Amino acid sequence: MLSFIYSREKYTLVLLSVAIGILISAPAIYFRYFDGGYKGIDFFGSDAENYYLGQIQEIYDGHWFSGNIYVEEGKNDPYVQQPLPAMIIAFLGQSLGISARDVNVLTKFLFPALLTVIVYLFFSALTGRKDFAILMTIFVMLIQASWIFFDPGSWLPFLLKGEFRGTDYNFISYARPINPQISSIFFFGYLLCAWKFFFSRLSEKMEKIYGIASAVILGLSFYIYFFTFSFLSVFNAVLFFWFLYSRDWIRLKKTFLVSIGALAIAVPYFANVLEMMKSPNYSQLAHRTNILETHRFIFSKVWWGVTALFLLLYRGSRKVKIFTLAFLATAFLVTNQQLITGKTLPLPAHYHWYYIAPIGGAILVYLFFMYFEKLAGLFVSRLAMLFFILISFYAGFLYQKISYTKQWDYFIYQQRYAPILSWLDLDIKKESAIFTNEDLSGLIPAYTRHNVYYSGLLTDSLISEERIRHSLYVYFFLNGVTEDSARDFFYDNRDWVGSQIFSDYYRQKSGCHGCFPDSILDGFIQEYRKFLKKGFLEQIKKYQVDYAVWDKEKNPEWRLDRFFNEKVYEKDNIIVYKF
Image (cartoon, rainbow, N blue to C red; front, side):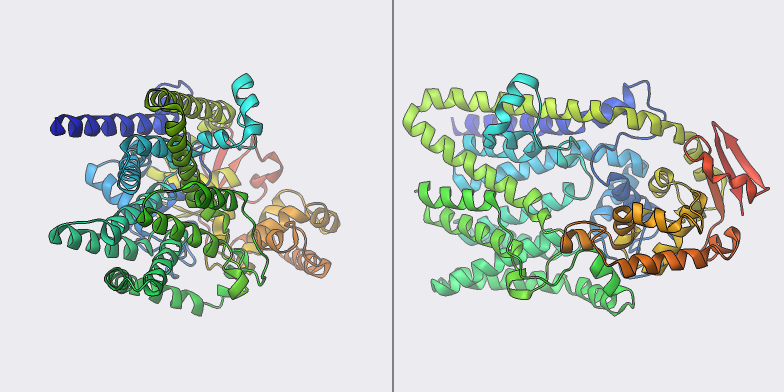
């Protein structure tokens, strides 16, 4: 009987993980293999996916600890974006003998399926209820779609029109490589191992295994994602001080050993951070990544609601209560650490999107069904669970379908770049620097072995602000901004200029990208007018550039034929010139 129950659980888990893996990966797989419009550019959909694919390609190209994926300058700078996730994916792809783009599509199925298993095992161990664990896992894995169940204002639009109010339709987040795909595997993997090691009764052998696994996962998380290791480190600290307060010396010792082991593994990461902080460009990077001096309190309706309901309604195990409240305390601390330090973290909302909302919602799912079962009885509760599973998968399917439909036109248009990307990858010297428009500048690092002259996400590196401004001025010139029109252009596009140079710094500080002093903008205008005094070729060659790719259909105003004679490629209104 026990073996039958175990087998049923095992096959249910396999079925669940495969179903979620298929649902999350389906848009990318369908577009590549079944949509006749596909010519070689994959359906990214999720935010910044071409950047993450570029990171993976960098590993294929031999740059294991690259300072940036875009330009030649700064390749040897200390890394800002942790490299281990890209290494893991690249190692998998190279082991299978497939390209970076192919392994990216594969992991859209593989890692969400693996994460489903880990999340289930965690919730099953924590709650002691396998049926509740299934519901909580489905909620977490389909979070972009399933969150509407806690927003009554979204129910009617969803039921009547099939709409998801207040969403951007960027697919379910676990379709995106690296973060949150791999970072979430480490995050939930640590929670599972920590629960087992700190709170479960285990044999001596298993206790050692979970203890070592906890230390290793926490230590490696420093090389995975800032929001992963910072959350887990604070979580560990909260548990440590609770065990100290309650004089639970055995668990206190366990927490201490895990922390020491993790810190030992993280020593090279801290060395990299110290090197990064020595850079003359570090202060500029800190501004661009929204490190502000403020004590502003961040209020989270989700955190307050979940915490209040858990305290009011949960009447179960004391160990579960300690673990859950430690998580909730951590969520509050990492979101509002600026109340003490006076400095904000870069994009603290990442804690909410990837950790607080998914687990907070899962807690609410658990509380709801726990009380519903008591009130309605086991049979009715089982029917309600089945309904929840079906409507969750329906919501997930619908969300994926709408995301696909809304972005389809854009990715069909992107297919016109497939031939030029193939030519660049195969027919010119590796590591060439290519000047081109914004769309191709995002695709070239992901689909070829080459660098570009500039890309907007270059701001997330130790590249100097002068390098960023100079590159923008090159584009301004080609777009027809003259000395006479410069003032009107800069003031009319103040928000955009601010976002390109300062990233989100002023938006976070003052409410908009363009909310910086006029004197700064006037300085840019004066600098641009001085830029125009020299010839275009002299200015563009200030930084490495080997080829210029001109999309005549999208950028006819550039008229690059004014400056170049050596044409090495021309097809479908795309021309390549050699410097």
